[in-house]
Each structure stands twice: as C-alpha cells, then as structure tokens.
Image 1 (cartoon, one colour):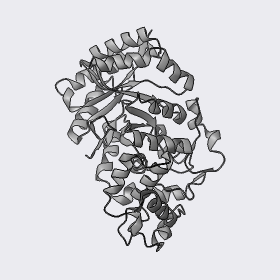
Image 2 (image 1 turned 120 degrees about the horizontal axis):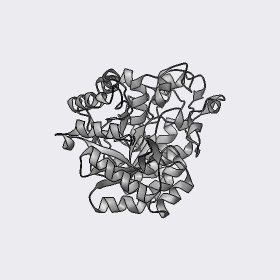
Image 3 (image 1 turned 180 degrees about the vertical axis):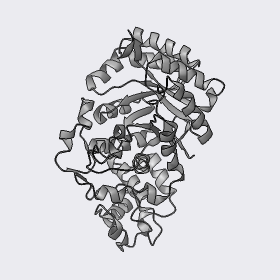
Length: 382
C-alpha cells in the first residue's frame, strides 16, 4: 500500500481508503470482514457518513483492540432520529448525535470530524454563522476532533469553505464524468442523464480551480463517488456512454491535485479486493487516457489530464508534473511558495525543453505541450 500526506494535517493515509456503503450488509457482519481485510492490506483510513446506530456499533466492535491502526473520518451533523437518517444544522441535535456516535464507536476522538453534506451557499453560511462551525472548532479544541472537514458535491460551495481557512479536509465527488459538470446546488444534477445528452468538452473550470486551491492551501481531498455509484463501470449506465475499469477510475482520482485517498465502497470482500488490486496494477491497467479519448459523449481537447502519455521525454522532463505546477501557479496568478518548492525539486525543468514536439505526437488530447513548457519557463524562471 502506498501512503500520501492528507493535506497539511500531518496524517499519512493509504491512497486506497474504505467507504462505509457495505458495512450494513449481512446484518452488519460485513463490517468486521472489511476491517480485517483493510488491516491486512495496509488500509488505514475510512469514512463513516452513515448515522445508523447499528452500523456505528458494528464499526466500534470492529475497531476494538486496533483503534490506533485506523484514521476515522466520521460525520458531524449526520444523526439518527425517529429510526431514520437526518442531516441537521441544529447544534443541540448535532451535539447529541456526536456524543452518541462516540459511545457507539468506543473512541475518545475522531481524526477528521466531517461537517456533513453541504451543497448550497446558503447552507455554508448557516454552518459558518449558525453555530455548527463553532461547535466543530469546540470539538477540535477539546481534542475530540483532530481535524475539521467538510463533505460536498458542489465545487462553488467547497471552494468557499476551503478559502475560509476553516476546513482542513474536503470530502468531494471526483470522477471523469462529474468533473465536466458545472456547479449546482442539486446533487442530482451531476449524474442526471439529461446533462450528458449533448457533447461535453473539458473539465469544468471551477472544479479545476477547487482542486488547485486545495493543493495550494494544503487542504487534503478524500474522494467519494469515484465509480459514480458503480455507473461508470457499466457501459449501459455510464454517463460517458462507455465503461471504465476500477483501476482507471481510481487512477483518475489519484492524479487530481490535492487528492490523498480514494474511499472505495464495497458490498463484499471481493469488491474491496478489486479496488485494492489497484496497488499491484501496471501502468497499462491504470491508464485512462485511451479510454477517455474514445468516449462517445465526452471529450477533452487541448486540456492536460496529467496522464503521462507524453512520456518519455528525450530531455527526461516530467511533462505532467511541470504542467500541473504550471496550472497551480496560473490559477493563483503568481507562484505560491509550496508550488515553487515542489517545482524546484523536479530533476528536470521546463528550460531544458528543446521543443522537439515528440510528446505532442503521443498526447491523446491534442495538448500544446511545447507552449506549456514555454509558459512554465516564463512563470518559474527556468
């Protein structure tokens, strides 16, 4: 298992994490099965968005004797009321729900306390001013939450929260179909079939800006809906009109800026093992570029996907890395210190480009790589 820094939290998390979708299977007996498998394969991060007390109790049982082997990302404001799930912004309800959750999990703290499901700007304003964010900060000051997070499907709202400086971890829906959709306060819009009827071209700029801002500010992204609820794996259901593999979906998410871990949901040990097989997959199995280039309803043109199809460079420049740092700098209209430092440690830089154009003959998306290298030399000075 490979591990990544979760933004600026100091946590080193497994790049494959565990979603909680399957925990309730088989009378919640699946919970322990998945945790046993996670521990054996080096997975140390999981999300618990559900407020179902049976699932939370099962997670507490599964963690017994090994709490320190896992980082818990669990949700503030996801509560159980009258036998069903409820999202709340009432601080008294959130407080009672949090206390119950901690008892069921049998732990004194969460590694990430995730403010649950915020997709509207008015909702973020309520969180900021109505007491929920203050409550999250209170939990952090008391050591009951180590880091504050927010879950969202809306890049406009997520960006607002990230730029506030209050959020250290963002749980966000990342996959190659959703990334083309503009911001919406209705989560149904990102997978609605009608929104994929016309040809879609290139990533929504607000989503790109969100990822790059998270990278710059040190906000780690934990990925939900990597497989689009499974739709991306089925040609008949995929909004793109063609199927992707599990490895391609995971690799796409992991190549976005600021992404630390993909929370792979699984309803069986076999499904989880399929996601974990990414760690042993070769470059050809992970490669998504060729598949993207053949999508009948989605296309990227002139937009670098950091897929590294341009490699190898005769000058040994990592074109994908140089381009990623260029985009980060251009998004901020300057060169943030962290970007400058990351660019500096690259073994080869844009000034070494001899403009041979070999990289462009390999690019599936028609990117003007030579122009990117010229701009990078101007931006970074070498």
